[in-house]
Length: 509
Image 1: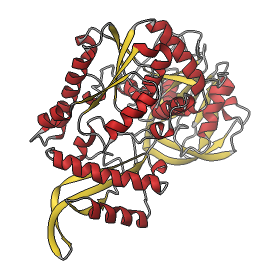
Image 2: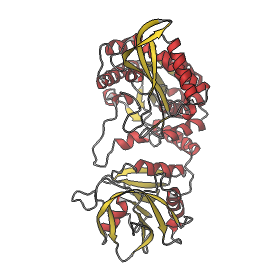
Image 3: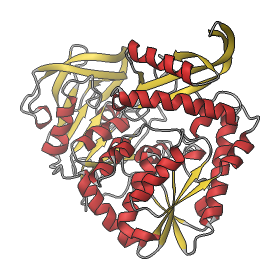
Image 4: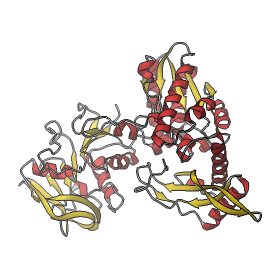
């Protein structure tokens, strides 16, 4: 049984970051909403209560019964979690005179406390709350303070229960990682044995036990998630895995042929389906981004269903669902969120009477890549930038035509090739070109032109939730502009997108 840390989510924007920090320690953890906490078993070594956008003083504040946890398992309350453990157990939480947000200097009051082990006497932490703990119960002892927050951290006497009013999971908290490690490893006693290799070994064994001799069909996209999921399933069931790779006509230049060949080289049982006429035909004249997405999602389902029905004895649908999708589908209010339709296969499981198998549903994107590398998959495939499910359709603003797709494919190829050649591809999380719905005046060969404008986009990110634009050197941007304009007929202007997320998104549509 894999040891784990349970994270109880009260709706904080930082909850996934707590999980990521714990996973970085090679310790498995799971996020569960406060109103749907799983039954506790021997695998749970400790519990973290997250922050929340709500106040513990609100009548509708998220509540949880802690009888099976508090005093029985190591427990760490972060921000809202800390205020909850104070407010509902005899202390007092009040509105701060002003919102405590941003950097603060924490002074360690009790350096011999296990949570404070190895920390500097003073370090920077990150605050983000509108309330503050003003009174703590008699059996609560302050272990750290800041200039403005007397109760920055506390421990409950005779319990392995701690509360901290700052966020150790964000990088602004200089020694936050050490503090979390003190809790997870030092206090909870986790062995730090959850590695990519151990994940592959345990997952393959679980898949064999679950699937037996059953057949599985999986839709490949050419991306990292579906590719790693396919290799894991192939390791478990071999030729009983059937893969379908659909060409929507909206992939990168030559991508269908190249990726299909690489899949075959990996030993996968894969069928390529050219459905570009259907997709492009159905998209003709459509400019609304959401309508485009729905058409693409619908067409994919129809093509996939038609091909899957040709297979005999298939009982399972494989999907490359990853952990952020799972977490986002179970918000703290208990209502499900619809994941973008093109990221999955809609209602196919029910429609075709298939059960779903998702071998990557426990992993973040960077963990998926580590698993792929542990299985010896090619770095060119594992290191691929994320590519949107709807493909180039959402990088062509306005209606879709074959001419526009071809223009953007040619621009994109030059862009990606030069990034690889100059060593910048691996420094960037995602890069792509956007075809704008405008034409501009230019001059080429002493003649007036009136042609299209393309925007280049490149961002750094960890998981796509936030992103910063990349400072590509001017000389590379100059080369990109020159080659695109000279080699791609129909383009006479290149611009570079220097907006971050938020407020802008990574894709334009």
